[in-house]
Image (cartoon, rainbow, N blue to C red; front, top):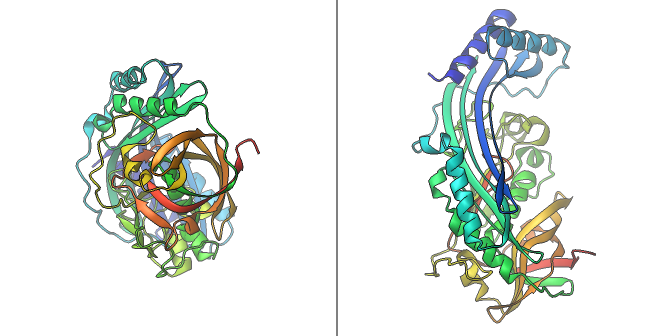
Amino acid sequence: MSAELDIAGRVIELTRRLAGTGAEAEAVADHSAQALTRFANSAIHQNVADATTTVWLRLHLDGRTAAGSTTVTDADGLQSLVERTIAASRLSPPDAAWPGLTAPAPLRPVEAFDEATAAASPRERAERVRDFVQAADGLETAGFCRTAYSSGGFVNTAGQSVEGRAAEAAMDGIARLDGADGVSRRASEHLADLDGAALGARAAAKARAGGRPIELPPGRYEVVLEPTAVADLLSNLATFGFNGKSFAQHQSFAELGTQQFDPAITITDEPLGATLPFDLEGTPRDTLVLVRDGITTAVSHDRTSAAEAGATSTGHASGSSRSWGPIAANVRLAPGPATGAAADTGDGPTAASARALVSGIRRGLLITDFWYTRVLDQKSLVITGLTRNGVWLVEDGEVTAAVGNMRFTQSYPDALGPGSVLGIGAEAIPLPDRWSGVRYTAPALHLKSWNLTGNASG
């Protein structure tokens, strides 16, 4: 038994003793250890590490619900948590939406835990930073390499008792030359998978190819989106479209059983290995198919949104899911068929994952990244944002000029709709989000139309 499972069990026993046998309660203890090595001006300037054990308790008593948390895990701290939560429940309004507790259920099998990543040293992260900087060959660089480890235990009064561990590593860096930035990112459950030299070479090649950009007029362009840009599509689709609360409240585009996407599109959430194998309500996590062959098949649910929608929890409860909705955090777009593309040598702006797609463009754009993306209309998921870290004009299958950053306004589901996807890269690349434990696995995408509405300055 892990220390976290023991703590969660003690909290439930205290709750039974202090609140009575009629109380419904669930407790989670999570130990999170994160370490970050940051670099700027081509030198490491910060190495930080943090380890915290947090205990959450949610209690449903006499028709009212309250929750509390603490980082004080001794006997007095746990007793204080239980007493405060009981007192809060008596002051809370009646909770007609209480969905009940997760029944006992086994966890899904998970691949072997990577002890080496969990125990990674500052030197190991620094070696990858060194390789990134050296591969950039004199260009100014900045970014980070991080490792994270989580161990958790869950117990509730309905008899569910589970525990698990997860580890994650990520690297994100830019290279800069005369105001042009190139970016390269990777995420993995294994630090050994992160090749700082390959990432640095890719970022530097894109920066070198981004000089002397031209300006193009607004309009609809055929585009190839590199995986770093596709990750933003997946993030917004998961947050606003495949969100079970938004779906239950008819604020999502999702229509289950409907061909809403091109038949080439299959999107899954694959949390096992990347995060704990159960959610904050103790529901076991598993692969969830959100879109299969263009047909929307599911949305992510916690117990509250599932009850509202007449569905079943998919294991996406979090500390904020009752307020903001349950959000899939490990979304993957399935790659296309293998094309025999050459390995990525870092010799130009087009990564190997996008190279074959670029060759199919008569006139269009290659876009590396999106940022500052904001929702203009949630129901249709119209997004506005900016390109970043490299845009290039493509003519007759060849990159001919760097292009200045542009603003876009585009419905993401429409961009991926039936007949709109002209190709999908053969390699799906795991990419880190800002938060540890969140990642998006994406190939490059060749899309028929993307609505560029102006240059970045206008």
